[in-house]
Length: 501
Image (cartoon, rainbow, N blue to C red; front, top):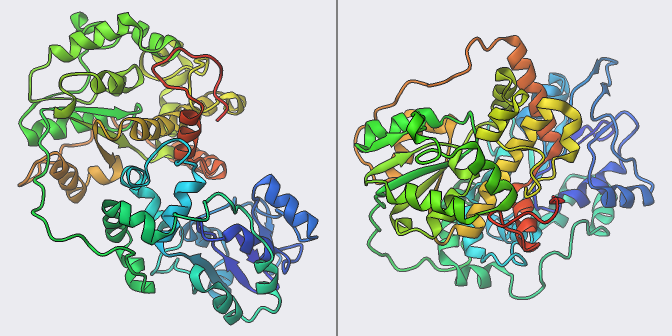
């Protein structure tokens, strides 16, 4: 992201559009008061070798009128967030520019950038399991509204569109760069070839990106398949949740029970349940240090065999001690749906801090993940200096990486459904989630459960600080999971060494 005062131009950086090369070229027009956010060390070296200004003023700013702020600008900051940090007069008077790319081509670039091909993940499965990647750019640079950029440079017509900006020398400097290139093979990776092999993926892109396809006149690279009889929604006999703590699992249990007419359990916590229906501390620690041992497999066999359909359980501890692996090998696998339930990460981490969840090691061993576990996807070392807040952030990101790991590793065998708490707790969001579980008709929306009480200014301030930290990390859970998988490691195997992701 760049705010170039001499050109009176704001560049909002979307993903997989040649944005880094454009950013390097644009920085050559910046003065020492312009705002330039950091890019990768290799790209910063390229910028320095060219004699262009590097990252500057992204944490502290002095604006042209002499006023100062301590706003935190970062790579890929959404336009809506940037607008709130930039003085209104500058936002209104400067030209806001972004780059847009045909979504059918952009998702292919993302597939190879994440190195999903080398991890053995088919392109169609990648698109199916990570549809959120298709909407990332429209969240960064909305097509309409107060935060929408003024100019959308089209990736397919960059020379003409950059020339239309009227900035002498910008195209020449941009065209001489190739930042982040060479990840995508040169043959057999064009949209027509890949989507012909994966027509279901083309359908997903067409639906998710309908607004931008209409806006920019993009076309689907393959001919739509002949009309077929729509498949009836799958009705699951068993429903489980893969989630972190403080993500709304108690509320979800109530939603499922009220609407699906099933035995819906949150956490079996009776005395006789511990170690049988409910994992105990030893189960959690065993899985995350020694993997799926015979003793732990015995626990899962007995638990799953004891269940009577229809049944739902939203116990978030299950997914951290072998639930998915156990389901994949069970007789109920093809009758089961797993809901991946997420929540706004900043609010999630602030909730942990407000309750002091990571100050009690026994609580961590029973419900969360210990930073001392060696078989993890995300290396916690860089987070430990932040104390309990760092532990909470690491845990949240580790769980995000585990969601991606399970989707990539088991997505073809287990039926996963993804949901976000903030959407699921609305009438429309709840209806969509229940429809994916085979429910039709009116929806009963439960009251919120286990919500953190008395959320005052301190909590809001902490949430904002955590959000800033998360934004600066720019964490990519799919990339972390793909690297982990490519290394030959699995979560159900005994740890050999600390992950470096």
